[in-house]
Amino acid sequence: MTLRTERPPVRPRSGRRPLPPLIFLLVLAVAAGAVWWNVLQQDSERKAEQAAACASAEAAPPSLDPTTVTVRVFNATDEPGLAKTVRDELTTRGFNVPEYANDPSDREVTGTGEVRFGARGKDAAAFLGAFLPDAGEYPDTRATAQVDLVIGPEFTGLATPEEVAAALAPPEDAAAC
Image 1 (cartoon, rainbow, N blue to C red):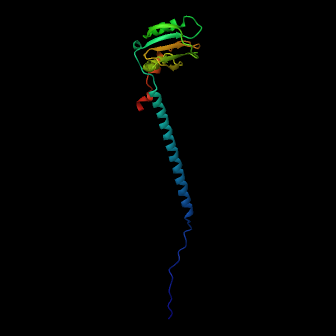
Image 2 (tube, helix red, strand yellow; image 1 turned 90 degrees about the vertical axis):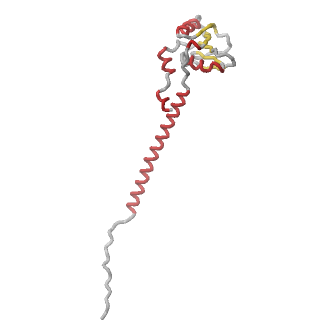
Image 3 (cartoon, rainbow, N blue to C red; image 1 turned 135 degrees about the vertical axis):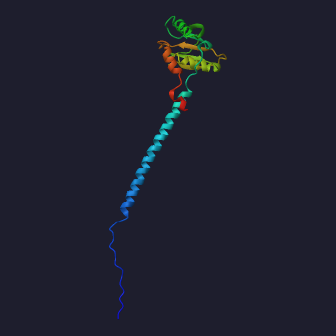
C-alpha cells in the first residue's frame, strides 16, 4: 500500500494587490494635510488682523474735555485773518484759546498744518489732531501742556463735530483686545 498524502486544496488568489489602497490612503493623507495647512494659515491671518486692530485701538486719541486744553492758533499762510477765524471756531467748540497770530517761528509748514507740543501736551495734541486730521505733529522742548495749532497753506477747515466724534470713538474691534 502506498500512502498517499493529500495536499490541502490551493485557494485561488483574490486578485487584490496592496498597492492601490496604500496609494489611496497616501492621497487622502496629503489632502487632509493641505486642508489643515489652509486652516492654520487663515488662523494666523486672522490673528494678524486682530493685532493690527488692537494696535490702531491703542493709537486712538484720548477723549478730553476741550475746556482743559489751551491752544494757541498761528497762521502760516498768506491769507489774512485765518488764525482769528480758526480761533473763533475752536472757542465755540469749548477750547481755551488765549492767543492767535501769524506763525512766529521760521518753520515751513506744508499741508493743512501742524500741531506743536511739548512732553506734557502730548495727549492734548493728539486730541486736537482729531479736529485737524491731516495735520502733522511737531514735538518740541516746551515745558507746558500748551499746544500750538499752526494753519498750513492747504487748510480748508476744521473737522465737523461728527467727524471729530468718529475719530475719538474707540473702534468696534477694541473690545476683543
